[in-house]
Length: 104
Image (cartoon, rainbow, N blue to C red; front, side, top):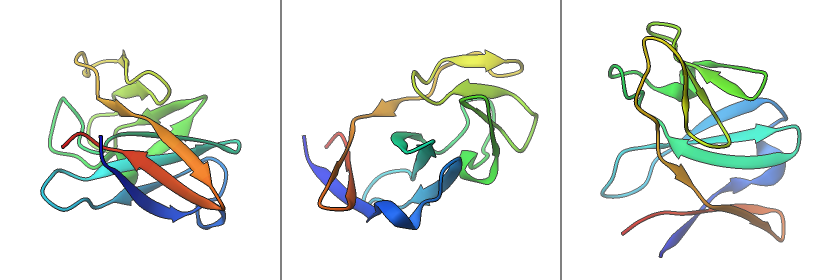
């Protein structure tokens, strides 16, 4: 699978989220959870909202539209009205750069 260089690891502070644009596909949300990086689809499965505009609470991203939530590590919907999961993507950090593996 192809991967993209999303950002420098030190550009994303702990417990923050960044919207990453990828040519030819929907944006991805990149999270820094206390120094560990995770990536998911950026668009909420319940409505057309950017999860990167939401808040991180206890390892979950809270959707800014209807306050539904998803587990950042697994993509599982954890609070209504969200019921469908979001897709997670493998992430690695090498030489200070965060890479996200995206499907083609």
